[in-house]
Structures are given as C-alpha cells and as structure tokens.
Length: 513
Image (cartoon, rainbow, N blue to C red; front, side, top):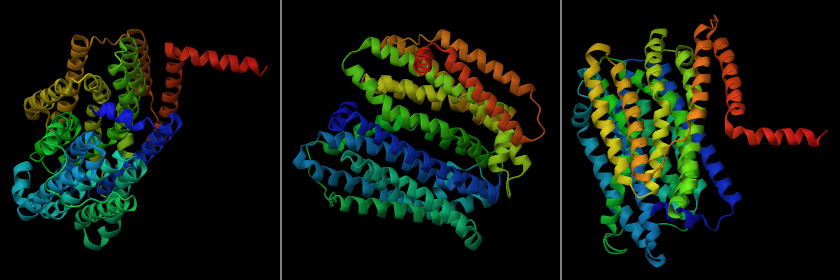
C-alpha cells in the first residue's frame, strides 16, 4: 500500500530532513497557489463577471480537471506500482506506463483540438451562442496543453518516487508564473487569446523543465509497449480508479458548478469561480498538511494497531481543524463584501460584481469547515484499507446530494443554489463519515468540551462583527482581523491542549527571575 511505501521510502531520512522537505515543499506549494490566485484576480480586473470571464474559466475547466484530478490519480497510482517493481525493472515499468499514458493524453489533446465545439456544447450547453463560440476558440488552444499537463504530472510523481521532491514541487510554481505573467503581459497585445496561449506556453515550459530535471538526474525514459511485472497496466489503472473518484471530489464540485452555471446568464461562472477560489487557499494549505504530515502518521498507527493513539489523533485533528477554521469562517462571512472588494474590485470588476460574488462566498464559507474535516476523516478510512467506502460516501454526496440541492433550489434562488449544493453536500458527507468512522473504525470525536468553547467564542465574534460599523472597508477588515487574532489567543489559552504550553511559559518566566 502507498502508506507503507511512503514510510519505507523515508526511512533513510532523519526527522529533521523530513521536516525540512515537508516545510520547503509546503512553502513552494503555497507560493504557487498564491500566484495561481493572481490569475483569478487578473481575469476579474480584465473582464469582471462578464461573458468573456465565463469563457476563459470554462475553457480552462476541462484541461485543468484532467491535469489535477486524472493526472493526480495517475501519478499516485504510478508511485504505488513503481515502488513495488523490482529495482532492475523499475525504469522499464516506468517507460511502459508513461508510453500508454502519454498516448492517451495525446489522443485527448488531438480530439479536443479537432472538435472543441462538441465538448463545450456538451459541458456548457447553457451558454449563449457567442459565448460558446468564444469558449470553444479558447479551449482549442488550451486543449493542446492537455498532453503536456498530464505527462508533467507523471514526471513529478517519477521525481518524487526517486526522492527529488523540490524539483517536482517547483514545476507548478513555474506553470503559474508563466500563465499569469503571459496573460497580463500579452493581454494588451492580443486580447483575450493571451489567456489561452499562456496556458499552452506554461504547460510546454513545465514539461520541458521536468524533462530537463529527469535527464540531469539520469532518469530519462524511453518508449516501451511491454515490460515490467505481469499485469502492470491493469494494476496501474485499477489503483488509479478509486483515487480518481475519491481524490477528485473538490474538482468534481467545480466542474459541476460550471456545467450548471453555464445556463444561468453571463458572469455566473465567473462569480462562482472567484468566490470559491478565495476559500481554496486556506483549504489547500490544510490539505497539504494532512496529506504530507498527518496521513503517514495515521497510516503508521493503523498498521501497528495503535488504537488509543489513533483515537487521540482523530479527536485532536478534529479539534484543531475546527479551532482554525470556524472562527476564520465567521470572519469571512461577515466581511465577505469587504474582502471581495479589496481583492477583486479593480478595472472591469464593479461594485455590483462584488455584491454578487460576496453573496456566494458567504454560502461557500458555511461549508468550509465540513470540507476540510472531510479531507481529514477520509485519511482514516484510507489508512484502514477502506478506500472504496470513503469513495462511495464522497460520490453519493457530490452526485446525489449536491445535484439534488441544485435542481431543487435553482428555480427560487438561482446561482446561489450551486453554492448551497456544495455546502449542504459537504455537511452531509461529514455526518456520513463521522457515523461510518464510529461503525467501521470504532473512532468517536471526543471533543465536545473544546468544540463547545470554539462555538461559543465564534458566536461572540459573529456578534461583534455584526454590530461593528466602520465606514472604511479596509479599516473594518484590519480591526476585525485584530479581534479575530485576540479570539484565537483566547481559544488557545481556553482549550485543554494549551495547558502544557502555559505551564512551559510560566516555568520559563520563573527561570528568568
């Protein structure tokens, strides 16, 4: 299993080296995501919540889904299969996997390029004719990058499997720099096409960079249609399938949001995109922490059957995530208009656009804690080899609950129904995971007292934010951020987990007297 491979793979590193690797990769990922967020800001400045903004976002949806969801699943499956191969057969096995995956990705790229209208009308049929045509034109160019994006994702997995973590982490950073920089620099020259060509250029350059890194480290691969152990490709695809279904939950939400939003008028896709992206940054940081640091620890405890330690990790993880996210969610909810205005309200992005986007942000942020907890809880199922149970719970909520909510509410509240679909399904998924964790794993979130304290303080913060009236949006944000920081300090002191910290501080003070 992947969890055992990861631990064996890291055995030769000291704890300090592991911490340094995780820290550097996390920082690079954070910078890459922040630069990627600037792309959304640039679209907002150039086009606001117009049909043109919808076209850019919709055109990039399919290549991005294949890159992040399919590419991510294939990469994880590749690492799993690759590490199980005998040392003398590893490179041959990698060549076989890369050959078939590359051919499939090239076929997709060619198909997208030849008939872009077919795919745009299939996924975004609700758009008007002109917007569909513009989206198809942009998609035709971006789609050529599908091959480079998918194979690049595999390259990063190959580098990680051979312990070259920083080299692979720098790839998405390079991609986002080129994408954002190219769009901003060439937009005045060639117009909206700058966004499409920048995606293609960024994908090609990322591919070239990773290819160079592989050659530099003597990891070059050739074309091979056979080799490796028996049933190599079957195992590879079988392992990728549950990872794709389970790991692509958030990406599936965004894909479905844009599919449904395509028929709700110009700017709806853009408004949903801007509001959801704003809550993705803290979520992505937490997800990185969970997948790189906590999951290996959880897996090790599960393998050793350390039931008490698992229960502690389960409870503490839920407590800390709630402590971090619930107060922040209250802050975002009451300052949604100010946040959207300060981040996006420039150029073509009007105050009316801010009001629409802020309303959606308020709905999304209600479910932010649930979605973060869902990522955490699923790791306990993966650690106990209950992958498919977590996958089915996710699929039921994404496709049944989410879509049902959208259909039921669209007629009365319009685009807000899409945001409520994601939020409500995230909450129902959380309930299902908690119940099944108790039934199947015997894990119970014994966090009633600290959670009550978190909720009490969060309600108090909400009351303060609601009745605090400051004329300047920026000043209001600054004052509220200071109050939020004070609230976090109170929570840290108030929760049981902080007592050891306080005792250490007291002893330190006494020692200096």
